[in-house]
Image (cartoon, rainbow, N blue to C red; front, side, top):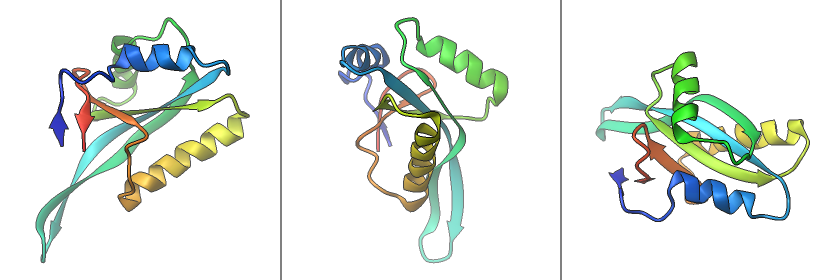
Length: 126
């Protein structure tokens, strides 16, 4: 994993792009932690695992600091925040999408459709 501090896809840019869409958006948030594994053949490996998942309407008033404070209040063990957006849909569909994201994480699938930030709001490239 590599932190890219000058990357163009910063949190507010992401929010503004979602707000510019003609259809209301859900913001998908998955708070991640790093799992360390001991594998006899590979040695020590790491993977990202979801700690908390939630969604909320995409609004102008969203700030990274507020999301961090709220998440820390619930569980401060998270290390990274994965962000996604999806078009307006029923709540059950949004929850299903969050479960799919958790499955993508578990299976090591491509995460390039999402933004990942560390706690200091630095974009992360995996």
